[in-house]
Amino acid sequence: MADLILTTFNWVPDMPRGYVRDLRVRWAMEEAGLPYRVESVPFDARGAEHFAHQPFGQVPWLTDGDVSIFESGAILMHLGQRSESLMPTDPQGRSTAMEWLFAALNSVEMASVPWSIFVFSGVTDEAAGRKLLDGFLHARLTHMEPILAGREWLAGTFSVADIVMADVLRLVDRFDGLAAHPACRDYVARATARPAFIKAHADQMAHFAAAD
Image 1: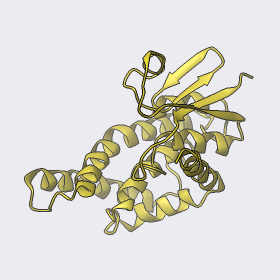
Image 2 (image 1 turned 90 degrees about the vertical axis):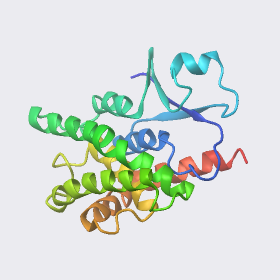
Image 3 (image 1 turned 135 degrees about the horizontal axis):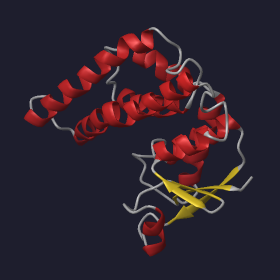
Image 4 (image 1 turned 120 degrees about the vertical axis):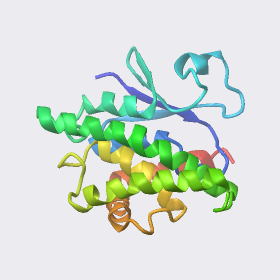
């Protein structure tokens, strides 16, 4: 089995620490007990080699032998092939995990990220753009609430779908956006209480702090 190498920035500002998406990959590998090491690229000097691995100059990417793969969702699907603790093996369970992983990225995160940026930037509730994003996010959370009230994990057992969905909702919760959605908030609490998340989060924080 090839060594897994996770590449992330050597440093980021305080605000995104604990939320940079290499956390999702760390979390998955901790859940699966997969050995890996972390390498760094400069935050403020993104060169040709960086763009060769990640065409948008972002992080993370994963190197698995001769394979280099970017985008956290794609990386998690790749890791899901390595461990039953990340992806169910039965066809229905596997399909359910994959559909919810994509739903987290395409249906929920597309609402949560712009909303979070507006909130962090101090855009008032009265601003037209903010009102649209409030409504968009509320609609997504309203649909998620009964789903998460009725199940512990999205695909029956914990999977890569929960890593992505919990991380997406965790950003909303950071700005108290789950106050009216207790099942969503409880789901985030369950996921982030897992030892693998706690270790992955602590490791990311320590990684960036080491460069201060």
